Image 1 (cartoon, helix red, strand yellow):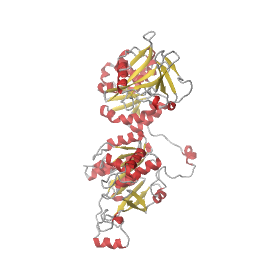
Image 2 (cartoon, helix red, strand yellow):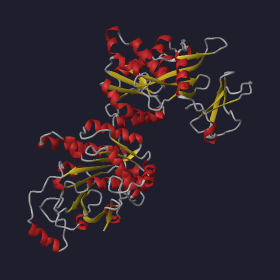
Image 3 (cartoon, helix red, strand yellow):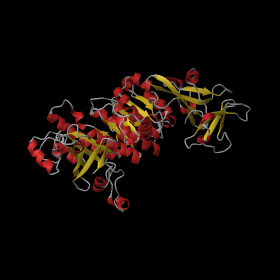
Image 4 (cartoon, helix red, strand yellow):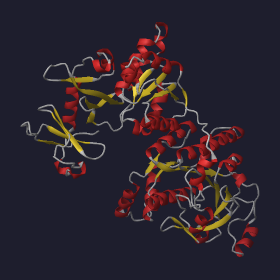
Length: 571
């Protein structure tokens, strides 16, 4: 499905009435608007859309597209007899019907309207003869089909179908079979804008709006493999959604085959949450597990800790803690840049204590190994632009500053995973409990830690959580510190302030018990910012491995922060 690529002549004699469209497999087909004929191979072969030079493609102006959309909006509507759908329900959803010019009544095209924030953005066009579809306008980030109708319904519950005619058919079924005294409780019905294959991505994007208007959501997708995969994808993102098992292939088929009453019963009484209690038997896993263990899918930027932990595996949660202004953000940005540059994966960052523009600039700095955020340093525009190309379509951030709520962040993580993010960074996790009493905050952090671990496994992603630490109660005098300095010991100095070389231990993490139970790895970043020390010593850091669920390892991994490249280098 897509917009017209080019207009060419047709054997009927027209000079440019044959419009060529791209198919899902990359080949092209077309439709001649002069003689009303579908043409499978408009160029006489299996020419690909990519073979058509961009300079030859149709470049419609915004005004031309708007005029075309307005023209379609003025089209009429007729009953779809073969679909058992009457004009009234088609008009409700704004569906337009293009009829044959020969008899003026036979449906040739369906036009499904798509809106964004109340504005008509596009029509999806369906050619009745062969079910071919294309788009007029921009359907990129539109709302659900029928969303404007659903919002105005005042319904408590929303049912989402796979196709546009299924939405209209299911609305009709509910209208027909719901007793009069319950008519006010009829659910709203919408459909997916881009079909089953994009269901997870679309619902993740639209979930905040859906939750804003509806208390309950049910899925009534097609009873085929694609529909069931879509159900699984959406339920990962929207775990509260219930699933409707229709008595036919889809809602429209139920209406056409006389199964409307059974479909109404399924929607009203038999919708339920997907049960995630499938049994797996050992013998079924024997062959899959019968292979040597491999390193994780991702690596650390530093060889020694990478060897110790055997890399980083999807499904893991990793906690990193440090004292105030000890370099957590620098470490986070370096890890993010490493995953993008070395592994080509998409990353998602939630950093409420840092503006997104600054995060992006710092990430570019890590990619380029240059400083872009210091006005005292010359700005290398070429290096910055090259770094931007590396980050293109690889970095997503939360559009907020200062406050982060867990419920909204959870939805953001699902949306990022649907976008394709494989690594998630949250800095700091303690921001999620701002304003809570200490006891309440610890309970909340326990809940969050458990949920995040489950999400990492379900979504097959890695989640890094950065945490502020409880301040150590002890202290060391200047004389005591200087004695240790003479012995070449600048961090790991025991029970004293973190910024003066104090140890980082697991129990200092807020909500530490839950984190220790839930994490795969827990690390501390140690250092010493004592003004008595020379600058190169103050730039030393120690990455301490505190907990390792997989291999039980611990250890210290010295790093040096190079202020010229802004990178942590292994010592």
